[in-house]
Image: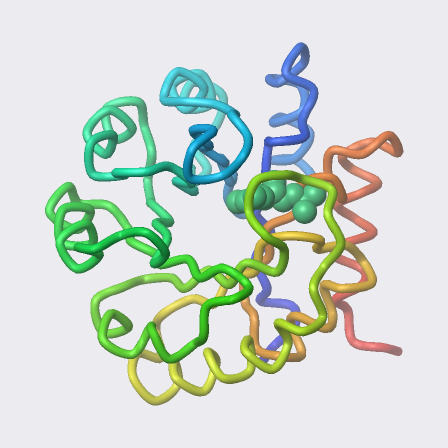
Length: 224
Ligand code: DX5
Ligand code: ZN
């Protein structure tokens, strides 16, 4: 993996919503490749976060790709609303979806990029049938629901397996990680095969977004 081609996707879950425009502006200027929006319904995960109105506000703030991570029951019911609001791609969980293939078909029919998310306890093997159909795999490196959790190192062998499967089945598919990514864990994830990293608390940090993004990028530079 060429470490310099790794994409960074700041998650706004831990942004300061009182200054969202300024925070997005800073993330964009600091080289964010896309913006990650965590949607939680208090049912699929034990937390409530944001809905389509936030995507609509973000759409007015940036031309960057808005990727929408749906941690909700019945994601199909909400796809149209998020598309209207401005979502460019959807990350939907394998867990709890009895008709995942249909959900992916609907996302593609709406003309959007589709990704499948697997939780820490879910094996890589469940991806085999859907891999030809999708643009992204998202491996959760924490249990979904909250920002600021510790990266689960036990997911690293699975990330390697997913990378192998992608190379065999659909090399164009991206491999993204979400949860506990910081300057210590980012290089481990990239070494295991990731090419997109979501980072929430490591970006929207007290040290400032620019400093935080620079630190994260620097951790991915090859040692001199
Ligand atoms: C967790 C969310 C993440 C979260 C990441 O369920 O999916 O996107 O915002 O936050 P950090 O980077 O702080 O783990
Ligand atoms: Zn997320």
